Amino acid sequence: MVAASPLLDAGRAEADVIGQLQIGDPFDLLDDSLGWAWGYAGKDRRVGYVRSSALGDA
Image (tube, rainbow, N blue to C red):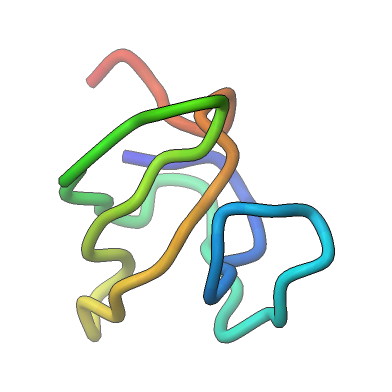
């Protein structure tokens, strides 16, 4: 699960926003590197990046 966070098309702050995740939306982690988590996000399972800090412990 993830905190409210923009879903980005790349692992950098200047990347384009491709979606908006809400608190509790699912996030299936594929990789976590250099402060960015990459995976399948939200109910529509879009692939993108969020800050690693947005991921919960669940």
